[in-house]
Length: 202
Ligand SMILES: Nc1nc2c(c(=O)[nH]1)N[C@H]1C(S)=C(S)[C@@H](COP(=O)(O)O)O[C@H]1N2
Ligand SMILES: [Mo]
Image (cartoon, rainbow, N blue to C red; front, side, top):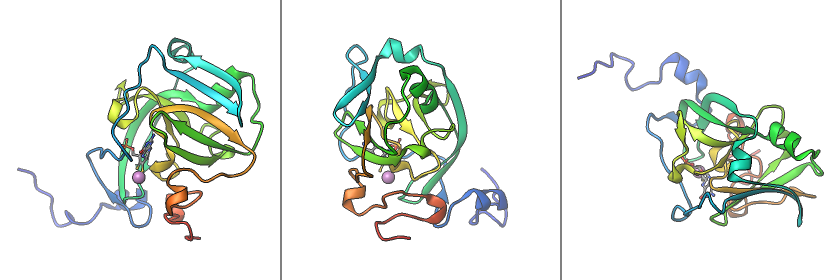
């Protein structure tokens, strides 16, 4: 039995400061997918960077695993209003990926594209400067399939729908093209601190 004291229903002061507007803290790790979890075989897995239709660089799983590794610990925020604190991820930062590709970003926007057909759009500036990674491990273990394994995008400063699971590639686009949820009423950018949930939110 646990004693919660008088503040049991309210987030602690620390938690309240870490919660973006309209969010609540959860301790489990909900799974949110538009369809069934796709089976992604490591033997045929490839990750590709492209400029529109033109491939710029591509990695097999062993090649990807040999790239420099980054660890990030912090909070994630889902537009369905749960936030999870102190999550730990390991993977390859987008900075290290671009360096390995020997490529400067050719445009200011991209689409993250997934093995289940999902995609989501992001400004390139939100992915570089240590702000995003392609995560292959969560909490010290290989990323579970339902959470996007073998590899998912992690962009923790935006709502979690921007963190595409089962990532197949990043495609640079000339314009900021709406992705799966952005075409279905969700905000083009999705900053949880500005509560940018739906298309017309400021
Ligand atoms: N490929 C793919 N990525 C996806 C989704 C999806 O359906 N397919 N759902 C998004 C949504 S809406 C959220 S909230 C998070 C949920 O990640 P989780 O299931 O690991 O909590 O993944 C995002 N990435
Ligand atoms: Mo979501």
